[in-house]
Amino acid sequence: MVRECCGAEAMKRTLFAMASPSLQQRLRTFDPHALRRRWQGLDLRTLWLLLAGSLASYFSLLSLLTQPPDEAINVVLVIGGALLVCPPLPEGWQPGPGRVARWVGVALLVAVLWRGQRMMGFDFVSSGLPLLAGLGLALLAVPPHQLRRFGLPLGVLGFLPLMRAVGWLTPLGPLSLLTAWLAQQMLNLCGTPVLRSGTSLRLEGGAVDVGGPCAGLNMLLQLLVVAVIFALAFPMRQRWQNGLMLVVAPLTAVLINSMRIVLLAWINASSWPNKEWWFDFFHWHWGSLVFAGIAMQIFVWLYVYWMARQVAALHPR
Image (cartoon, rainbow, N blue to C red; front, side, top):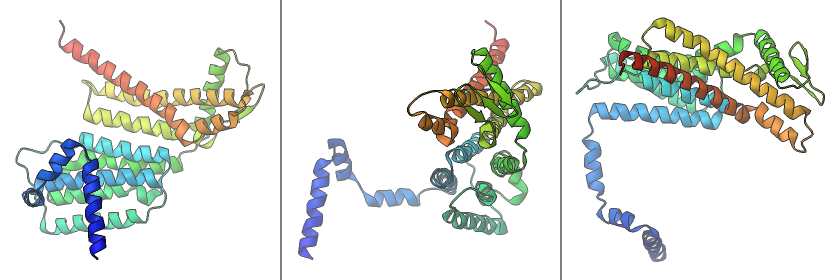
């Protein structure tokens, strides 16, 4: 026992010596009792905000660990959008749930955490967990008749199961045909001979088929969700302008995904020694996210540019 204690003390002294001078000073002045008093002094508002932030981080990390990259990006995107459109809390606001509602909120959060521990993939039930957690948080904050205050963030969280349902139910045939036709036009503009048969593009050195994830439905839904979030968080002067951006979003997604198909066709028809690796990279999740990020950047730039023009028109020099 004495040896173990001496070994532990020696390890503490070694770690302390390895720390930077500023960290050593903090360790010398660290008072656990002061930290405990500060924690006990937190009000209900701060505790509720900490709980909300912890749940947002929990679902973001859980999705990154258990789901494909594109689905994890959807979760992070929707949670970030819900936080963005959440109304600011009034000064001095404190949570005031109803007697029954608080227990319903606690039960929802416990059920969500229990289900999250058993989540090994992405299904329709798991896509609704952030929405249920948000409803539980809202019930811990206000009485049921005041839930309308959190209607916007709850509505944004509802995009996750909606995106999942649309992804399951939407026939990909028309979108695949449109993407293949656009890719054919781009290849012709670039001077690359190509023959299209339905959703298949045949080049001199190989062919690609536009089907399934290659149709770009997930990218389209991502940009639509971003367009809705921007319309709620940063509305333009006229509703038709936001409506026009809701049309621009899927068009941008289809165009950028067609560029990805062009790149895949070039790679497959090339004589690169490692073309299989490059094809798989841009065909599956991580490589497709590169083009999803490009599409997102283009849409955000268009939205910000149009809003800047409106602001400039309101305040001419």
